[in-house]
Image (cartoon, rainbow, N blue to C red; front, side, top):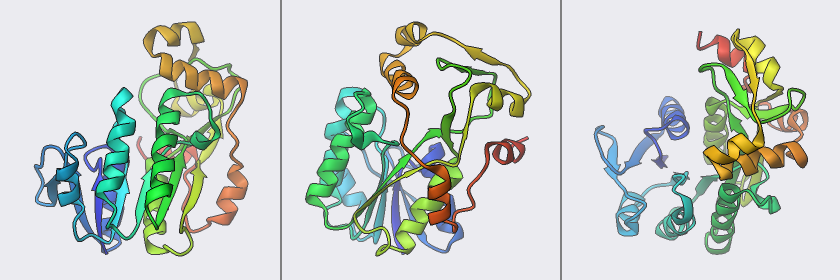
Length: 248
């Protein structure tokens, strides 16, 4: 298959592009500034460029840039530009369809609704927070709260599985996470310290992220990791410990 991948120069899109290539698929990397032989120009501020970038592909891996108020309009325009693509896999966020009140989750949900309304064949993945192995663990959450986490490689594996088994994931939304740990547990695995800071401090840095961590603390995400992994044994789900060890 020929698959167009947005965000292919980043963590998530890059993992998808690499795994698609490993699986023998042809990858069209859609980027604002093409530098690689497989790159094509596509700018979220220019829907016509996206329509050209998405031409004659079998599938599209769509992730939208966190661009604040313009993300929803950019994302919906990208969906419209992909109207002739046989299968669109869009990455959103865990529980974004639940009316969380988290600004960037609600933006993703708006794009999801548009995708479902206008496209005949779509899959939405809702990844949890990305795993990280950099620096100490500083989070505005209680030390007893378990945070849902996902390895970028597991997002890629899910996306590729959706492309390779389209009937199984036809018009489905799947929230995904690899592991669930507290801040101190993550810090212990990384051999560093856990630093808890307040939501008020987080608010001064990013009201959006503060809203997200407030939701995690006060409401919590609804995602049954054991059930997910049992349903999808094809994915070599990474534990946080294994993922960190692999980057040592």
